[in-house]
Amino acid sequence: MTARHPAGRRLRVAVDVAGADLGPAPVVAGALAAAATVDVTLVGPRALVRPLLPAGAPPPGLRLVDAPDVVGMADEPVAATYAKRRSSLLVAAGEVAAGRADAMVTPGNTGAAVLAAAVRLGRVPGVTNPALATVLPVPGAGPTVLLDIGATATAVPEWLVEFAVLGAEYARCRLGLEQPRIGLLSNGHESVKGGPVRRDAHLLLAAMPGYVGQIEAYDVLGGRVDVAVTDGFTGDVALKMYERTLDATVGLALDAVRAFSPIGALARERQRRVTRAVRSGLAAEAGGALLGVRGVCVICHGTAQAADVEASVGIAAECVRSGLVGRVEAAFAASSRRRRVVRPARVDH
Image (cartoon, rainbow, N blue to C red; front, side):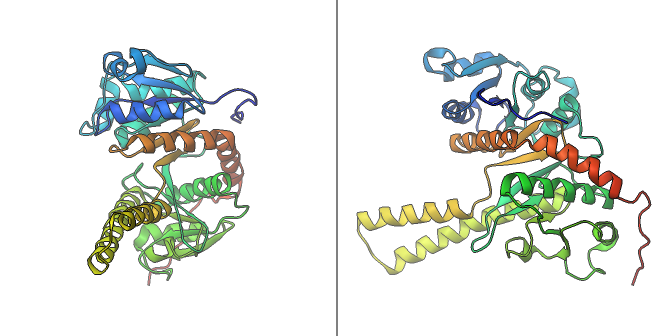
């Protein structure tokens, strides 16, 4: 089992500064802010990173590792990962694998990041495909873990079962829940809904502790479940729709208040503060944890700002401190003894 972070030593997080949509500047700025609480290793082309550092050199609590190759957002993940052997993604994952870092954070190409982590860190025994998880706030109830949000495009029933095990352990580590309630995201609560993949997954999940059945999209933020399980394509679409809807709703509300209540500068500043508080209270976490690999890897948006990178480093640190990887390994060792080898028979209606 993977050991917890040794007490008395500062955490070390490798941050991939190359490949983000907005360039390395906001990533470096976020890493510099995070260096107040953890030791940070900046991984990327030295010539690009040095000019962004104070006095052109790493300050205390921060080191720089040169990685001249960059995997861009438009690159095909598999081809780019194997062609660019000194990419910042592979080097950052290598820092974790070699024990020089406790976790990695990247705002780079998601597919390439998943592959780099799987290649360098390896998968937890029993995990076929890693899954990317985020935490969504639910006003009036506890937060909900949503996965997969983009590590896999499609899924077979057995993978969805694996995602449920991963999500449940993540909820235990991040949310402090002893027995998370797990739902399978579908287009209806009824067991006949969802198509063959979800119907078979529903049958496989039926014996899993905490499984409440199939859920609909509104249940994700309805307080019915603590973990919502789906394939990466659906999860990615759902998350991005949620984020854009949140921005649009907050913007419309602010415009309406301004239109019906002509106010002065002080009141406008108060409105902006309220708007920021509402958006912050409803926003998904800045980074998603890649679950199922033998190391902590957090992937954030390619458009991540400095505050998002700093927050993602915080998520990575929390995962390390909670012993997430070791707990996932233990959960899969236990679940593999419980799960059936033969898929239950499904009756079509």
